[in-house]
Image (cartoon, rainbow, N blue to C red; front, side):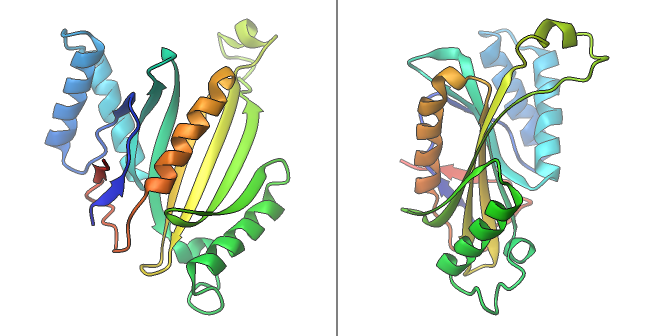
Length: 216
């Protein structure tokens, strides 16, 4: 199916697709835009490798989220993936047959397994949703050449994960947003929640296509 998702201003999508020619063309276009008209083969090659890695992991949509009011120096990474609902809700199809039941079951499991995270059940426009918020810091290996530079203040890593069960197809959509810009966390989480609420999809999602349609 073609998944509908509203994209906020300042979002730069990555070329997540199984079509390698299209992937290369999209990567070159993004690299050209990043170079202000001068194509950058290094950036294009890096984008292709990242896009392929995401696609192989079940990601169907991804990109860099920026806020026009604060500029591109602060950004967040957003990915949207799809997996089998049965992997996360063992009793799916038996006791947990509705979206509400499935979402509450997922929230219960995540709450028990992630004591340091904030796990919430929400009834959003997209349907029953589980929100998971985590705050932390990157810990770099001691032998990393840049370890000393950040030893006094390890970079932050804040994360929002939204899980939306699609019980009609037995699938689970997972939108993940992470950023090291803690100062602008409220802005980014606001954009991410709007994206989650806009999700529309009630038919089987084809992971091989890696396609999503922008909402209006």
